[in-house]
Image: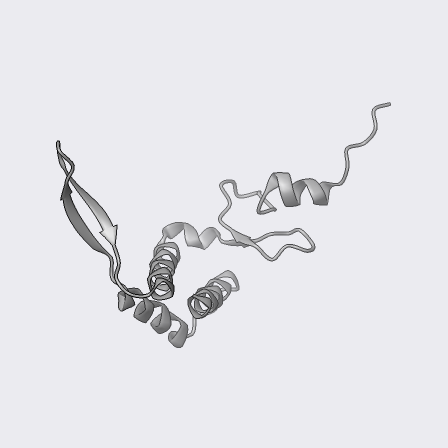
Length: 122
């Protein structure tokens, strides 16, 4: 899990700063995915056929594979070009802003803290 997280973080930071992601990070994310492949198990629930996703293997491997897949989805999403770093002094979060002028990962958390307390009424 930690290795997948670190590889995803390295690729995100490369994209954030407009540099080419290092090939070993991309390869590691690619290789983590099939370590516990998702298999859709078809089930009859009494009225319809449903599919439940199952993975085999140890929990850590299953979680790492899912995280690598989620990272692949994020990194290939066209919205990744809008990736920003939160402008709050002590925040390390990256986010995809819904609005181009958004400056903080969370208006209620970082935005409120950075804007400071409201001014007293006259």
